[in-house]
Length: 317
Image (cartoon, rainbow, N blue to C red):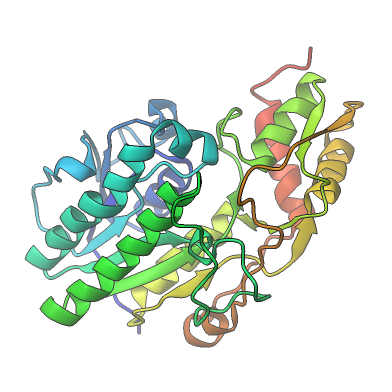
């Protein structure tokens, strides 16, 4: 039987993935303290959580400290800008979240003898030269490029997590999360799925960077949450990939979204951003073998659910 928990601290809990994770924990009777400074998270993301028994929200910057009271037996560190527009707008804040935020979250876990889970990212692989990406691959990252503030913040956070495990014996785990999508994303998040859905629903041109042949592997948010929780409940240290191994090109993704929405929006092409990965696909053998986890929600189903959520909130022009 895996680890069980009574009180979890979730940094970045007002973000897209964090709010879904908080809800999942609460559904299973685990009390949750959400810490978020709202630099990219939003209070509306907590609308379904505020007032629920066992939920508490603290507005605070994890990189400046975690003013959490009460014994926690699980610390999940998700606090960080995660979309390119956000970390380009907040480069120093992103680096601080990866460095000081991770340090504070690790110290909180250590003080309470709690399980610690770092939400790292597939971005540690950079623009990978190996496909699919296994956890043993060290990556191909430009340390001074425009994406480096996020890539290197997470790479440092992984190194810091491993150092705490070796030096202090902290019970740590590292999840490398691949592209996640689903209801609750911000329309202007800057990532492909919400951007294309919002454009399709409003009749705006659907923007594709580069020639559209670059691939991504998209994992529905419920599956990502299950993966994070499976890792937390295990004894694994990781790193372990959490993502969907089915690749799709951005051009094909835009076509699927246009079909699901019934949109007549044209597709337009923009220059590809510097260091934009050409391919991104996880090898999830480790997660399957050690956690018994794999994605369950197919892309067509996941996109339909996500479009339905957006459609209820945005009226076509």
